[in-house]
Image 1 (cartoon, rainbow, N blue to C red):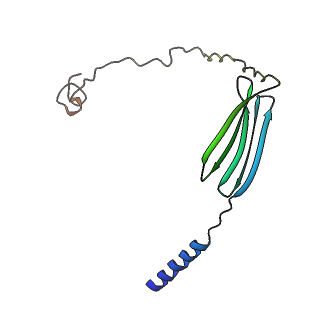
Image 2: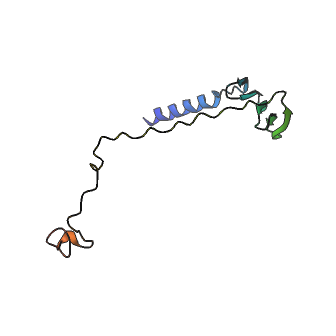
Image 3: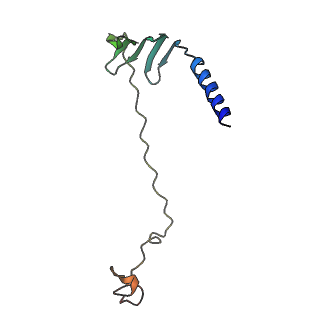
Amino acid sequence: MAAKFVALALLVAAVQANGIYDNSAYSYSYGVADPHTGDVKSQSESRLGDRVVGQYSLLDSDGTRRVVDYAADGHSGFNAIVRKDPVLGVAPVVAAAPVVAAAAPLGYGYSNAYAAPLATSWVGAGYGAYGLGRGLYGGIY
């Protein structure tokens, strides 16, 4: 049994040592331009080996477009250059949703139907449950 376990462990170790697949090359980009909400942004990134290069941009609330160019690798680390470009148009102002008043509760004529019950006795604190003072079992009410 031990020989089978050792053989299996050696087989797994051999597969692990040679079976590493590192696909370190990719590229993507996307963009959003929603005139209803004013959400305008984009991003693109590429990787080859351990070097990543990319850019993203978005509209700031002051009406400028922020563009960030970045690069990262194992030698220099992460470096970014940020710039602000003026936008030709003005960022759209999104109108706030109208405020709707809450509906009044419905009344059915029995306004005191849910009133608190009238207290008829007093239950004291302390050892009332044991009959040693005021309270439930043999105590003074």
